[in-house]
Image (cartoon, rainbow, N blue to C red; front, side):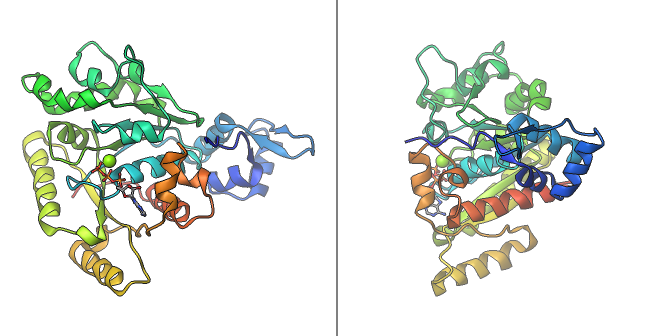
Length: 319
Ligand SMILES: Nc1ncnc2c1ncn2[C@@H]1O[C@H](COP(=O)(O)OP(=O)(O)OP(=O)(O)O)[C@@H](O)[C@H]1O
Ligand SMILES: [Mg+2]
């Protein structure tokens, strides 16, 4: 079963996305600063995604941010975070491109994309110098949400690009021409610190590092931090890491203790945690981000809060 994104937004929803009062939006319309909205059969204003997005842009400007979701440990919630953060940003009127960099292609599958043999994926984008990003972008069922999909043969990409010229900056260069088409590019990384992951880190100024509370490993975090330091010293690219505790069970003493340990180790760079919620397991099976599939769930609330924090705190300086 697939649930589609709501086809229309109300004036209250669009005003909230744009961070203003409904009254202000009505005034702007009366003054001709935004186009007059269409009306539904009850004469209420309705907006489709593009109309909502234009108003959000008018109020807040476009963002053009790229965020890598990275952690070389497996199963910590990277794909869950990329999928649901992308959904939550779209629900706030932002145009989002989700890029799947994992040969397991879980993000691609979560978004309901099935590639035919002759369709290109992110692998060709890396390997074929002439392939541009535009030709591998696919629309999803959700207005405002696009995807560059992966497929299993991406696993062989490392060897193919090993001798490539400026091999760490391939993705960065490929994304440059589509810069203006999206407010956010969210990149789901594979569970390793391979050349593909380095390409994601080089292409982004900021990264979210999901940390599964139960498997929190200081060593993994310091390996990742060292990679980021190397990228900065050798390639002169800085990435700000923010850490996202996942699968937190606040009712359990051990859950709270681990959270405290993570927070004391990583200090102010820790984002508000994502709680354990079975709806986060169900949503990808429904090919629908949790915010649309189960809007009242804990998972939907936690990822909505994450999206809000990301929107409110653009990363300026690098760590
Ligand atoms: N907050 C959560 N509550 C409950 N289950 C979760 C939560 N976050 C993730 N999961 C589940 O944990 C499993 C691993 O999550 P996910 O696939 O997002 O991790 P990953 O880091 O992308 O894994 P990999 O390294 O294999 O790519 C999935 O089955 C997912 O549904
Ligand atoms: Mg994954």
